[in-house]
Length: 301
Image (tube, rainbow, N blue to C red; front, side, top):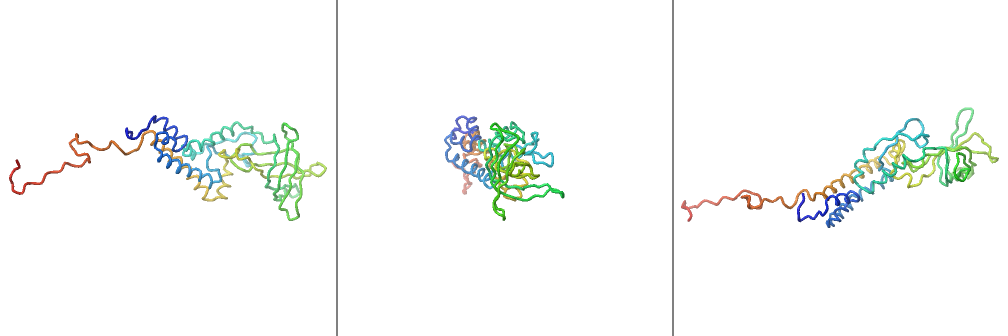
């Protein structure tokens, strides 16, 4: 409730500041102790949720799977649906705004997955696939990948190498080339899917290709829309820890919603609730005490 002894200054500006950054509205009003409490508790809970959730519990949209292939490799922009948990996370303010920016970048991003416009130097995890009369043979491998488009401005064909590490037979280098398929630039997963052909030393195709993932830049996956496959991976690797991370970020947003209300309206209970003596009752609000009877039975006065 509002009261002259709680200086709210401009309540609407205080509420806006409290929304943008927990505690900022109270700091503007001069309520510094409460501002410190709100900022410390709400921001710490939100950031801790991000940390234990590996930076991925906050996103505004969830990408839907429409087929057997990963949405990262869909030629057309895959459909999305609103993530209801973000309705609570949104009220943390600026710390949750990157999710909206990443959503816009995701929608505006060129959905082409058969074009490479820059050089890639990254760790690679995946398999080498070989066509045999009995079907495909898949051999797991990890290594360091160097890949670049065949033209300076970008191309659908690439060239490069994959230095395989961790192979019992020793380190070896695969020559890569041909057409490429690569995951969307902006996507809610730190791993970016990639596939291209393996060539012979003479540069000829030999019926092999690599399929796996390379690193996606932090600014291209943080709070970006993930798909259900990425959520399955997070639940598999983090188990209940990921659910706890989501709950922490939800609670942080709901707590700041109450802080916004407090900045706009002041304390819910406080000054001004007492009844005055003019109402026929004492300031404490209790009944008027009855004088004790005269033991002599005589009237006073």
